Image (cartoon, rainbow, N blue to C red):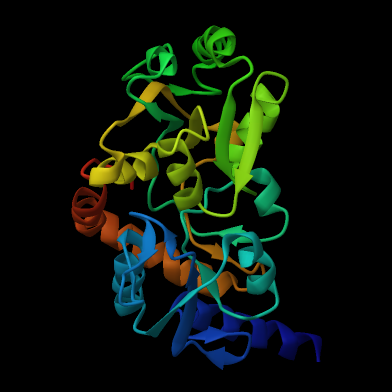
Length: 283
């Protein structure tokens, strides 16, 4: 019996390597959740259709994995619990890899990475926050990052800052600025963008990619990115597909598809289309 189990596992392992079997079933359809409210990563069109970088990338990855792709919208604050409950098989929603998230789910290899920082109005004193046009890693450039953060605090003292709830951005503010600013959490980035433009916030803290996309809209033409861009540590190791821990075979399928899409330039083309900047890590 023990030998039979060993042989069975070996056969299963071989099958998994081809991406054919998951928990005793063949992967023919993969359901992928996205937020649908985080442009340009993912958003809903006026017609109610999901679109954006991750929607287009998901379809491309499914093609490479030879599976049918079903993409569904899911509110951010319930996106991991619903994955664990089996509502869908994967998450592609601008989700950064963090140690805390890795306690409950696993991730594919990174498919996009970019800095985070401040969004303010151009006429605000905060537009002069230190580090403009710099990108600083919280760990690799720890001394520089600490210096810049300390330089920010006097200008930000007592200000009201908007951030999307349950994100790496909210975790960053809680760690470094909870005694400096008034943190106001929002369900979506769209909501805090509107409050910033309306003067109900002094600043927002978000991914540069999201802020840049907002700035392209006419109603946000007076908004700008301020200070240095930050990455690493509590802000995560890059954006990847979130998966249930037991679905190791599906992880391999995504890893292989992402690696191939980076190698042949597909992801670079998609990031250039949606972000106007390179957002890909090294293959």
